[in-house]
Image 1 (tube, rainbow, N blue to C red):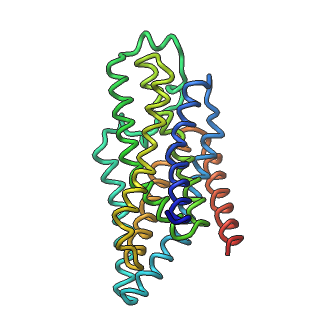
Image 2 (cartoon, rainbow, N blue to C red; image 1 turned 30 degrees about the vertical axis):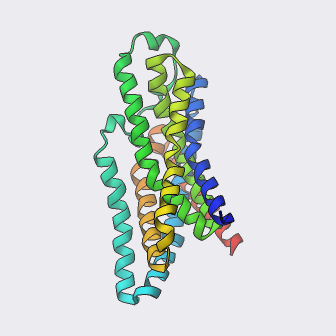
Image 3 (cartoon, rainbow, N blue to C red; image 1 turned 90 degrees about the vertical axis):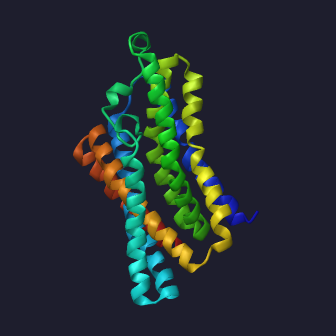
Length: 272
């Protein structure tokens, strides 16, 4: 296997399995530091928005214009961008909000209490946890392809994409593990369900590699990168920023957003 492919797969594995960090926080921490979580999610949103509009979109445009011509390539870039938004929005639309790990709620409900296990409806909680794990796997599939494609084209792009997605996967892991723990009282089972749901991300990368690599050219690359940009912008605006607002103060999430953009900008300049 080519070294670039191996590095891309490892980065995707890191991003996906960060759900285990969220699971660990939910199961073994008595309280959640909302300010830190709010700042981290704002930071992740900043990285995603900046890299989407300053790197991914323009690289996609450059590739498609070079292959299809100015007018057709420009139209193809815009359509692929909004196609990525439509894809991730459709996934969210068809997953019930109470089982959707991207529909964040008040984190006080996620703090583990031994006494609550005996009072909550365990069958419903188990079902919620299992469906949340499946919903997370569905979301992680295109995210895995995004991380993999970015890292395969340019490792300096793949690393920040992987870090941003890893941060945004942390509360999702928490959302999977806590209901299962409440339902079963088994921390190990809750942790492993959450941890393994993140495997959909490297699985998505592997499928993308096997399916797309034989056809990988400037046109395919351009469509993928423009679509990835759309997916990441939607995740940042629809999920990360509202969640950051929910978890902490308004300014905390905005400070994280601006810091994420600044760190992304500096890291890209250093790699030029």
